[in-house]
Image 1: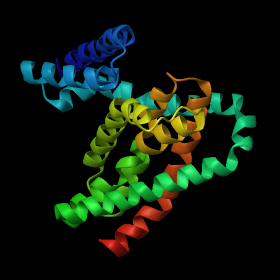
Image 2: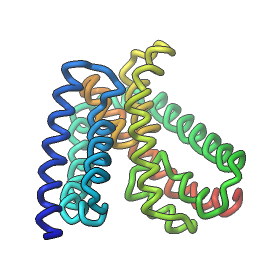
Image 3: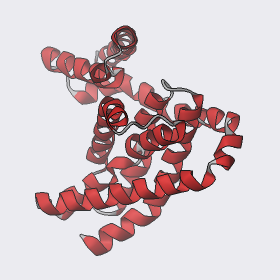
Image 4: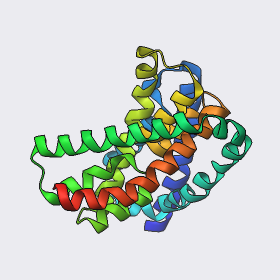
Length: 228
């Protein structure tokens, strides 16, 4: 019975996302980004039907398995725009470096002001890295991997929702700034959002996400060890 419920919710998740995407494309309001609205709808459904998350994941895990090939598929816009990546190499690396610095400084400042203990601080800090790497970093530094993944998803949704408003506020219109901003701050979900702007934005968002993940994977465990 549990597996039947999981399969039902597997298809419900896909249908809910498709429906929310249609609404989002019709309305165009950033607050209705499909990842966020679908997540909220599923939470309401699970609470209303009193179905545990573990039961949902018997079917939902197959959606999760699609994350890796989806990330690999982002290599295509990278390849198509490799010439522009070489052309903008210096501002690209400068943007990624400044984004990483801002993420680290703001993250450590928050955990210090909030007075989080080491376990929760180590769980929160990898929020700007893609989920698999964030979970590994949290595990290495004494954090909670599953909760770290939740923080990653939350930060990605926040970036996709509020990113358009921030870009408009600061008059950022160049594809490099848009791509690096989304990829650096909102990783995979941000890259998905960047694809709405164009292929160039998606390419720079993808490489920004990748470079950030690599640097975070080396720097964050050391920073946690000496700064917490």
